[in-house]
Image 1 (cartoon, one colour):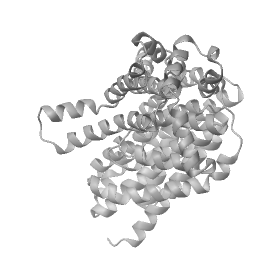
Image 2 (tube, rainbow, N blue to C red; image 1 turned 30 degrees about the vertical axis):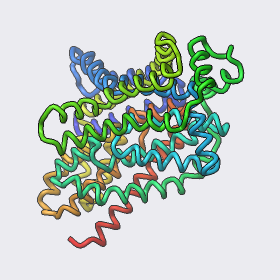
Image 3 (cartoon, helix red, strand yellow; image 1 turned 45 degrees about the horizontal axis):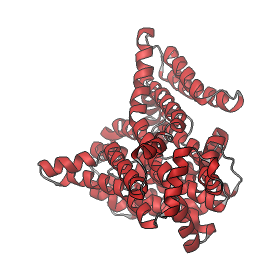
Length: 466
């Protein structure tokens, strides 16, 4: 296909996907798979390779997401049923007031998001979101979406997140310069995004039945033990007899974060040896979360006199609800990979590179268009770095301006997350909002955050001496 035909196919597939989901009310999993197959055929993928391509890309996405979502759901269920989320929610409400709880969660998300991958951070803090929703009677989206936007901002801009690391490597800029400039930019953009998007979050949000059931489970079962199944009832009774402290909940949230930070630092700073290998091993996200499941089971269940079989039943009950999130996320990954493999990104890059835009603006615009067309932030960043890297290299920029160029790409990689992005499905499904509500809130807020970051980058580019 010609570059123009590829671009039209990519944009048309996204439009078709939105029509199928929003207007025809087709289930997102079916719509994503169907459109992915159609795009693969239209762009000339051999039929013999189609099944392997779709299944392989879906498997890679699910391989990353499924373990994290499943382990995170186990941790979240134990925190919820133990009353731990309610304890933290009550403490936050009493300290900052109900009106400022979303801001408190945004601040917490900024700190957690620096060392932790986006998906992991969202999963780790979601029990607190449900606790806040239960405590205040507001929809989970009011707390969860601003929190997730904050994590996406950090994820797109700062090492050690993979997109930022890949761009820094491609442009030859040190991680120190990225952090020195990126941290204050991310902090300011996060604060401004929170303020500017308050009207969006003030609108009424719905909540899907499955998430509403999660939010209401602990409250209803506390009032009436018959509302919970046997293991859940025993788990809550044990916690009522020996209430959970805020320190215990802080510990189970902090442990995987610290393990992942330790693994990253050990891999970069320590000499090869047994201790380094151990630290890197326990810092792998699914290993850190798995160890935290064990810690939760002991701290919140076994330590309070519960039988191992009962705790195991409580943990297992968290898994069925994660299936739809994992499947839709995997289908979104398959669709995104088909767009990448079809050459849509390269066609867009070649077209924009010939426009004569200033290189800083081109870095931002190209990354955002690739993000909209292809989906994942990391893929958009790596594609842009590959296309513009040679052009940037000929400018002989200093480290400061190379870092700003990388941050401009990061800003573009944040914007307009929508239905071909796995993060869109994780956030909307876990916050319990519809696709339409997700597009009107999450997608718009990611665009606002993206533009704010780029405005900061352009200002620094203009004022800092070359």
